[in-house]
Structures are given as C-alpha cells and as structure tokens.
Image (cartoon, rainbow, N blue to C red):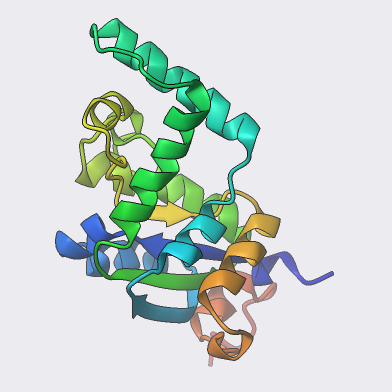
Length: 200
C-alpha cells in the first residue's frame, strides 16, 4: 500500500471553465493547497470517452429521470417518456456539452487528494455549492434550470469522488507514461516529519 501523501485523483476543467478563462484560477487553487500536478493536457473529448467516463447504470438513470419528471411536473411541463429515458437524456446532454470544445484534464497527487479536491470544488450544483469553493464562487447554474433547458449543468469542473473511481477515470484520459513521477520541493515542507535542514 502506498503512502497517503501519494494518493492521486482525476480532475477535468469542463468546456465552460475553459471558455470563461478560469483554467489558471482553478490551477492556482489546487496548487495553492499543496497538491502536485503529475499530468496535464488539453483535449477535445470524444463521445466514446464521455460515455465510458460517466459509466452510469439503469438504477442511476431511473433515479435521475424521476427527479426530472418531478421538476417538469412542478412547472406544468408535459411528461412524455419514462424516467429511464429522461435519465439517459442527462448523460446525452453531458456528452453533447463535453464534446463541444476543449477541456483540460489533469491528475493531481497529494495527501487524500480525492477528498481535498472535492472540498475545493464544492457540491455538484453551483446554486447550493458553498461560498469559497470553485463552483460556489465562479458560477450560478442549477439542476432545475439545466433540467428545464434540457442541457447539462454548467459547473466548470469534474473531480473523482473515490480513489478507485479516480484510477478508472485516469485510464480513460491518460496513458500510464503521461503521468510524470518527480519530486517537488513543496513536498518537503508538507510531508517531511522533522523539517530537517531548514536552519543553517
């Protein structure tokens, strides 16, 4: 088992983050907390990559579809298909959104990197994300609005929610040789138990 300080996670700045010129601001936040960038590239995702990335099952499609039906009924819109299809429409909209332009994919390393990034990014819905998080500070979309407009929620960034999911997602977007193993001086102050060698 590797040391906790070596945990890796996958992050993607979505097309809205790139188009709004927030790449530098997002990178600044992840670096400022002490995470190390071990892979970074700009790509235009393919449909196959996106469907593989989102990796949803029938239970997920039904649950999300039922929420969409509830949202539509609340504002008097017709319900003309089963929950499963509304659920699949969510991923179809995500795929359409994610393939619309370039994204910035990255792998970050550091102590409990998955949880730290989730804390920085905030909740999936910008409307309810905490102030101080990336989503809470830089965008204002909501599930209700995106559902009514039949499009993906524009929340700037994707991050893995579990270490095993991070490993799965990294393999979709990066080849093993694209992850750079290197020592960063910043790690000495973050992880060196005794802070040896500071005083002369």
